Length: 336
Image (cartoon, rainbow, N blue to C red; front, side, top):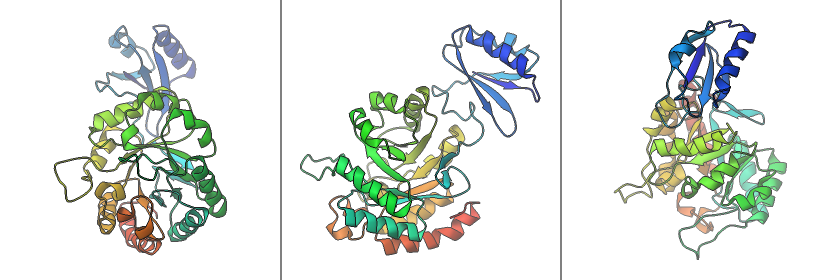
């Protein structure tokens, strides 16, 4: 349920209304938007008589939220969520460009890539320290050593870092990580999501391989219900009957999510198709449909990459991609 307040509602009367509602065992969240102020109600609202609430002098309207996700719902929070990140933000006017290798392999590699992508216009550095792999015999990442190498690259370039967590038991290792990524295979690891709901860091939540948009939003709801409102949604391709590409990039997810939720939405064109030459056209498509950013795999020697070399582009290709995206981003009202 959401309560839309009248303009210039007296603060003391609003506080009385909130106190009356919370006495019924429902938690309240005040959202002050550009156009209106909303009180969002979370919990069992079945005992609340909406006609009685509507009669209150400070209330303009009362609406039921029928969708199972509440805090992630645009009805709950009409204005877009913008997440500050260093000198930039995610979900604002700037197009977020997250770039880096699938896996951190060495200090020389990660610093070289970080310096190259920053020079080209990347605003954040990605790199896998813990790698979930289909085969137990594949490279699994450098783990805590990989995080330390990412932090060295951050010190060398100033770029905030994004890396994936596999288990809540590793949370202490992520103390200096700027954005924690939850991979597609962990999207419904609800115990992990609950723990991330208690941390004060942005969470980049990737859509599961076979998950619906509602399931993605319900996973975001797990994090937000714990108190962490800093969630970034990522469409990274879903599993369909098509075998020509690694996955099928669902670009329609961007405008649909923008309608359903206030959370930022970014696209991962690298994992979506699994083919390096397809990254550029899919990235252009993502910008055209209104994505807030891109997360792209960049490796200085894709042929010798220990992980996902086929879908990684070179620093030179990334530089060219950013140049091509700038005019399109401008047409979409974005800066890059």
